[in-house]
Amino acid sequence: MIPLAVGVVLVAGATIFAAVFQDRLIHLPSRISLEELEAQANRLGVAVWPTADADHRGLLVEPAGGSARGTVVVFHGNAGQALDRTYWSEAMARLGWRTVLAEYPGYGARDGRLGEAAFVADGLETLALVRGAFDGPIVLAGESLGAGVASGVAAADEARVDGLLLVTPWADLPSLAGEKFPVLPVGMILRDRYDSVANLGIAGLPTAICIAEEDQIIPPHHAERLFASLEVPKRAWRFAGRGHNDWPIEPDASWWREAMTFLAPRPLDPR
Image (cartoon, rainbow, N blue to C red; front, side, top):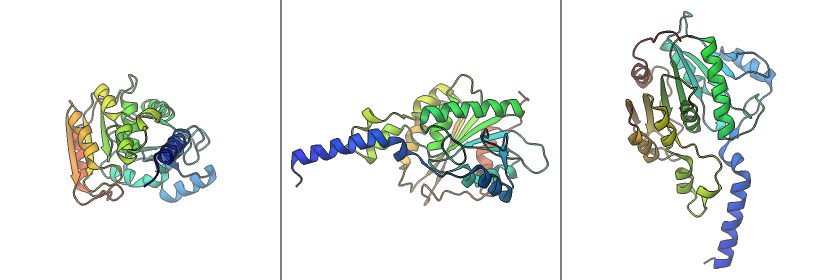
């Protein structure tokens, strides 16, 4: 057995480490030059948006035919970059939706600080640009950590969106972190809360939630708790045998159409 004093020192050391370096423990960004981002975006048939320079906010994909039903703004997970999530735009383009794959500060070719406050504030700025550029309904989508960002954006008074599509979400970050690291006082040291239960309670929007039943990273009971907390029009899709990173991303998967039909059953009046 580890002596008590040694155990206390180890826990204290781990707590200090987690408190100091939590941004780097939570966020795992891929970095890329703007030139390489543009080159890869061109190869994938997506556009750096709204401008192909240091002031860009992410990537834009228009549906074929040039007339979109509305815009889906996607906030991705904690690893990689927006360029890795074109499966969202492929699925949405099939359904006639424009997609903005939002990029976070400190990810991809964007500079900036990591963290919940920075991501939510930046997401609201991106949303304002979307609203100024495009007519029609706006749906916020989030995957994993991005579900927490989307929920935070939706809770703001100025958000004014039409619904949320959340894939493999948590209910709140402290609960998840406390389950993962039970010996650490995570509730005291976490700066980022990403409290989606509270944020969606404020937002009061139709919400679709996708749950991977074999998710080992965000166990499904966290998403189930979030879903149970909602007092709004809601639907859940449960992917049997699927984990956090292998939920059905195929663009012809039926759940995409079902979710978007639920969130926006008909085109809304232009804003």
